[in-house]
Length: 511
Image 1 (cartoon, rainbow, N blue to C red):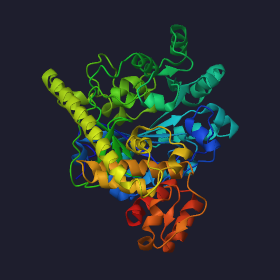
Image 2: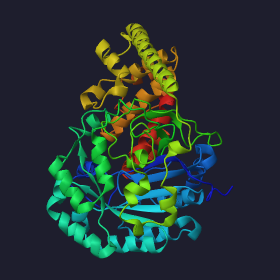
Image 3: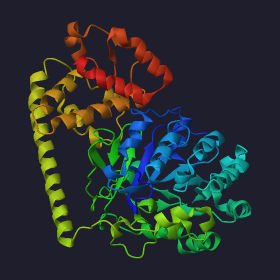
Image 4: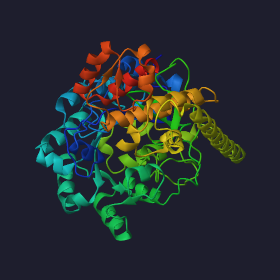
């Protein structure tokens, strides 16, 4: 089926590219903080590019989409990204690729896109000014934007207005005008006390603070509706508006298929499984998972919060004043609101939805309370079989999902015996298997990511060593002897995802 001319944009999707490898080291980037500690991690993909592209068929997701492809590091480093983007374009989607725009070979590969598809490509070029100058990449950056536009795609410079650039704004504006005939699009630099606080829905701040004088100065320099709307949405209480993210939008982990409605509100299941079945989502409603959606213009510009009036379309907000940087196809397709072609809920339906979510939350609380009681009962039967067996430790296992930090001492006190008890309890309650899986993956993720595992591994005959294993801390990696070389190879490659996946698959055999 050829979907390339099948009509308006019906969905807003973000695809997260795995890994955090980057050729830049921006001081204001949280990923750079990780890289200073030696945690640079290559992306791991569980599915072929062809399979992933097939999962985004318009008839499966509800129509053509604006799909943003973005990485925690430089998006274009994994070789899978370019053919993935080309595949999405060929399905008829508008694809916005976020990149620092300095990997010339990847840009060459990207521009080898059929003429009938490339008009729906948008390359958003993050303007990391100090790194461009430090690495002598300024010329590459602007030449690549020109090449992208000349090929028939859209491309624009994008600047985060942070403290570091305040004394260089005039220099940045001058070179953008000289090279492109337009100033960059921009947003404020949004911060929080910690990243975890922001994701939990804490207070969002900006640096510099968006005081009236500062906002006026930026408006005078950049004439950016994108900046204007970002500042406006800082004042929107995301818990008091009804959002259709999840229904009209979707987030997908490109590496593993994990889904979310909008950045921090998860969806059960795997997007890349059962791809012959349609995706039917439900809205976030009033349960936003972040402090502010001020930077999520790819969502609110497409009208995911209809009750907020006079929000410009993407074309008005991003292309405005920079029309020559965008293809006519993009300007036409992105000048829409999804709600104009999708049916919104009535006030009564919204109320029913919110009431149902409250009932589901109450049921979850009751379920977990019952689980704690059952777990403590079974724990008493295990007291003679392994140490430690304190009630505090067991209860902490049940709260693993909500923990932000598990320190090494905490992890080292959790034994295989505890996990065996946890599994037995979870087998006795409704939805227990999902809870057991979440807890176990969180534990192994922390053990591997924080390098809490022991330097030497236990290689043993599983059948003859169960009593011994029960008393071992989970941070001692029990490995069947014939697979020790596999694990050593994964460790040498520093592939955290592969190591977590290995122990997850082996765990049932160990228990």
